[in-house]
Image (cartoon, rainbow, N blue to C red; front, side, top):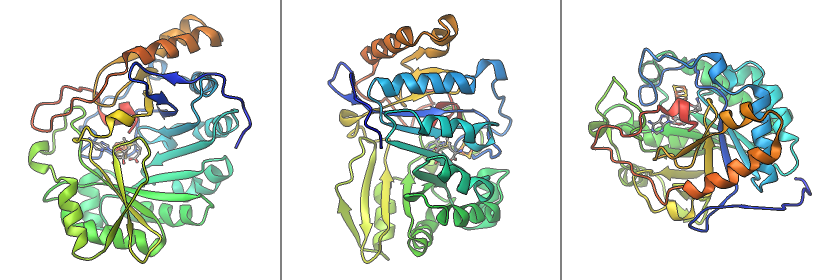
Length: 335
Ligand code: SAM
Ligand code: SF4
């Protein structure tokens, strides 16, 4: 916690205060999850992505504009060389109250303790199935045992909270939702179920056919658990429930509902330095160009960010039944 005085706030045309920045520090990943990427992904050349120094500089600008929560994501953030040092630097920025990250878990067995020591407070770990064969099918290259080891090490590493994230696809892993909740409950973790979003073209399945809505997951869970609604509004598309008799929460992330847009408090920085004003729209500002054309000029960068608030859209435009209008994949977006 810092006593940095907030001199200004980022406010958009609809009066929403932006206090949360999600940063994709790389588009690369050691997995190729079927809902996130095509099998033969072409990644960005190194010079096209922000350097670690540029990311830190942009994060500093945001914190000076009142952003207090930063999530480091990707791609897989931990496959980028220097990720740990970057998080140490961001954790030390005055104004950062919550430094959190999202990971696929593949590097956590080695890195969880260092991340916690670097100031990462909470961590989200993706886990879609407990079946090693299905895990390989869904991630194409992932190893379940390694990820489970990462979750165990992370559980002992002193994070305030660990949340699992599971993307649920009909006829792939929808039958496992109760087992996944039981896994979380047994370890004192939270878990969120995510509806697949139509970001970028994928080649492994038809997204409309694989759509398994949150309300069905909830019905499935209620066969085995009692879920008590909790008013845990994060400004995001999640509804949270306490699993009765346990300390674990279950979240449902339903991006196809636009109910949450009116309280949206977040923007995203892509690995290439594009500031995305909404996950489900292409409205963006090229902050890489701003920092490269005006090296070290914090005033110009902050003005560009303030101006960007004017184009934050009112709500997203997702439609699972149409071809994706959003051509970028989730790994480039920073989920
Ligand atoms: N590699 C890390 C991971 O998998 O946790 C961080 C980046 S990943 C893009 C962040 C989250 O987005 C993961 O929980 C992943 O399951 C989710 N995700 C990826 N593609 C998605 C899609 N098309 N729809 C919904 N969620 C998606
Ligand atoms: Fe990698 Fe995460 Fe995308 Fe899976 S969801 S391919 S782990 S970035």
